[in-house]
Length: 216
Image 1 (spheres, one colour):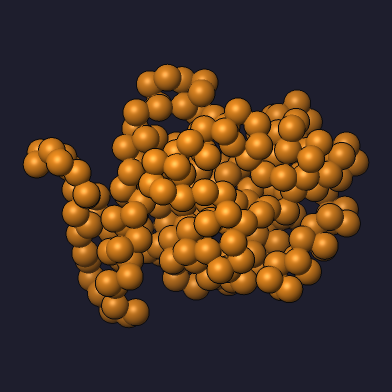
Image 2 (cartoon, rainbow, N blue to C red):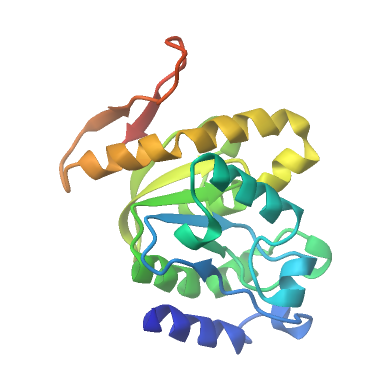
């Protein structure tokens, strides 16, 4: 926990990019420092900037509801963002802003060492797995080597805000969330090295439900 507190202290005084000029509070992240699940979103919004906490607006409320469907709370996971300060007007973070925050996110991942990193939306996906599309990779767990991080299992899903803005995204988001416990169980079975491929059977009633595939 001391390591995460140190990282948070550095984030709170960071002036590496122009986002610090308009912030009320930086938003390092919060949750269980030994969490198996790490959720990574895009960046703070207005409410998050006001209180210095991640995912406490409408998207955060939906995230908490989804966690509840798999018998978890915010305290059971760790929640962070790609950028730690609110972009003006909630615009997309600029590449240089993402790059400035990247060392902090790397340190957080290494400190927590989660079993599963859930990538919430396209910005989080692009930071860890460039050149992939959220629409085609959502719901597909992948074990990948990331420079200066090592090998982790990533699980891209829609950002909760995407489900609020487009009702068509809500059902896929809920379905992907329901698979998280099963993905975690399968991750625990993975060999440390040299596995070629493994399948994860979804914990669903419908026999025709498509299996999630863990790409190693």
